[in-house]
Amino acid sequence: MTIKFSYGLYNEKLVGDPTTSSIQMRFLPLDLIKHWKRCGLTSTFLADFIAYNFSNHKSVLEVMSTILNELIENTTKYSVRKEEKINVYIGISDNSLTIETINNAGEGSANSLQELVKKISEEDTESLFLNQILNAAHQDDNVSGLGLITILKDYPTKFGVKITPAKKEGIYTIHIMVVLNLLDILKELK
Amino acid sequence: MKVTTDDYTLEIMQEENKAVITGLMRPATPTASDEVFKDIKNCLESNKEKFILDVSGLSFMNSSGITSLARVIMHAKEFDREILCIIDNSVLWQRKTLNSLHSIWSKFIVQAKEQ
Image 1 (cartoon, each protein chain N blue to C red):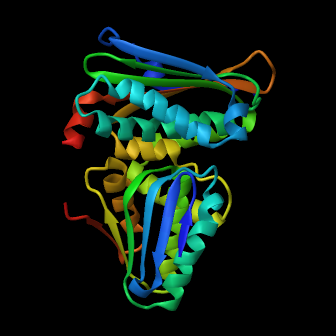
Image 2: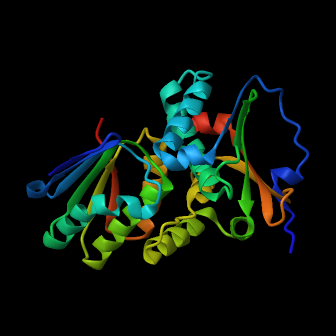
């Protein structure tokens, strides 16, 4: 069965303010898998770059690094071919900040993401977070599945997911977009 | 007892029934930091008094680390132990995520560090 799926921001006509600042990065998941610390380094570098647009640099850096780290860790973990590049884009306009990650995943990961999005659309994020963390903590396994839920629970965001078949059978291109309302974030940091 | 890595420092003061974690914890998997938290679990088992966990100096913790911490909280629940978690209210993830963990165990109390 071929999966073709889009949710949230990918179904909306995006009319945003012009981008005033942006950065894009491409890297191999393999490099991050080899040295996991590179996930944090990459997130903090990108967050630091973006945070210079704000007067409260340190607080924005903390928030951005937290969000980017979860997204970058996810793209790294769920990339099916670790030698195929991941894309991370960040763009800032007057009132919002957009992060988009693009990677290729296998059918199992694409299905799991689709199921997670369904849960997110149906349940309150606070109770979803609690259920997910209790499951992960009980199962004693190596996957928490909490990254995206934590972002949506803790920060004022809109998000979207798009899954399309890649050239190779059984491989899917996963787009995840998170848009943060800057005014709300800055209010939280006061 | 003190564990120091490139990323974080965990100091357990058994006499005070207290642990302080500083730096950043971004393990690759939830089980990767279980070993680190094992000593905290041991403290919870051996001492009935309130355990103080000071994470106010922990800049970052990823979702794998949070899951591992949740296992500590569930351990405290199993042994009916209270944990007072000291946070820095200006660090958003600490304020938001750790307060949510109170739902796991009512005796996991989050308190902001006095400035």
